[in-house]
Length: 169
Image 1 (tube, one colour):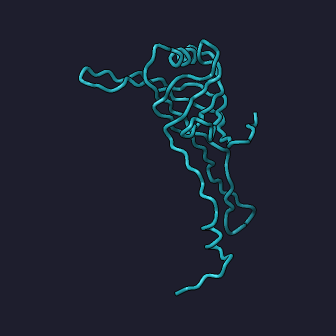
Image 2 (cartoon, rainbow, N blue to C red; image 1 turned 135 degrees about the vertical axis):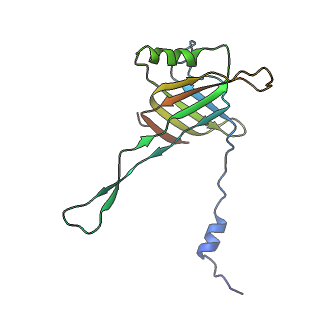
Image 3 (cartoon, rainbow, N blue to C red; image 1 turned 90 degrees about the vertical axis):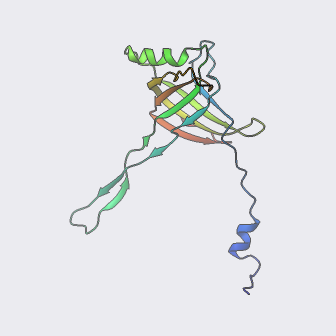
């Protein structure tokens, strides 16, 4: 049997407070000025995905150095995919239509994660977004599912804002 002295690493790990985890089913999507009323909230969503960023690895070698250094390249952000039930609002489609017609219509927004009592626990802000794809619902006479429309957004920048932090503009 192994005896443990008080204050060991294992004891310190066990005495830490547990992190409170948040479910992924309560969230809001805000897009600046998308709705006619001027508010940013654009309805209930079924799914949001693509909140990611990555940096390609660049290899750099100086002179006759035997091995290359690996350094981070420019950050690349994934496209955000928004899926929601079809509503009477045509805001998604009109935004995409303006892009198709050659308008520059870049918008900022946020994905806001809420806890069980609907308090904000995390926020992902995106900047200079524009819709690169709109997809209407699949219509099937034998189906009994909700009609879903999809909007795919290209974003210039994405950042996670934690409670108590202020986002950089």
